Length: 361
Image 1 (cartoon, rainbow, N blue to C red):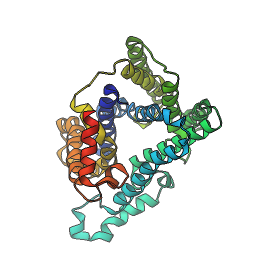
Image 2 (image 1 turned 45 degrees about the vertical axis):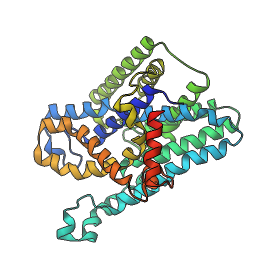
Image 3 (image 1 turned 90 degrees about the horizontal axis):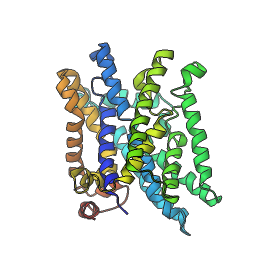
């Protein structure tokens, strides 16, 4: 089952993730590069407007997997779904651990001296045990954990148990994260974006939407999406004004729920949106692009610092997406293409053929 609107939104959600990681009008390695207040606010706005992406990915995963939960061999099917995710997590963690973030330094310092700061950074934070070799890889084990917990709830006879558990974990995540400063005085050492804290709620919601055929009219869904997004931004502003929580700090907030649900409902109400577009055709590559794009983000960060161009900052995410696609095409021709891009052993020709077939169907 394919829905053109959801397939097209996969690509836009990937672009939103690239926006978050490429940090227009900000530099995570040197905050002094864009120091003016209006630049800080603009960077935070780019970041927060892109925060629909990961909830959308989780909702989509749950929605399309739900029918398999009712199969006699559901446990096997869950494992077949999760195994490529975990393999991708391991393989790309190794890539990010072994590939230098600063390739030119290899010529002057050698491999070990170049990698030492990179390895020290990885070992400095216990949260990296959940994340892996690079910050964005947290998504892969989080999705696998959510799928496993949904399967367990189904085995217990009530998928709604996963939703209840997901809601409790989500509220705990907010308590230890975005709402920690006003309610507890400081954030928890555990980064509550990781693991099932964030993922389980949206994956189980996606499954229940599919199971009970929950739908909204297009107009209602649109206003739920817009209203949720505006409340999300207002929520961030209130946390900043009242307690000084940085506006760009949030991975999710309370209003992430209506925002993402409205978006997903709008896509279901408009299944032909994006049909035949390049957005839909690029969708089969999204998982591989998600895994590899941070290499290019890191490599291009010094250029952003050197150029200091507002035009480049606006165009940077699109350039990074195009370069990521080019790197994807190069990797797709390697003997390990299936492992690196899909998490399963597939020949380069089969990898490309499978993607073309899925895009054509």
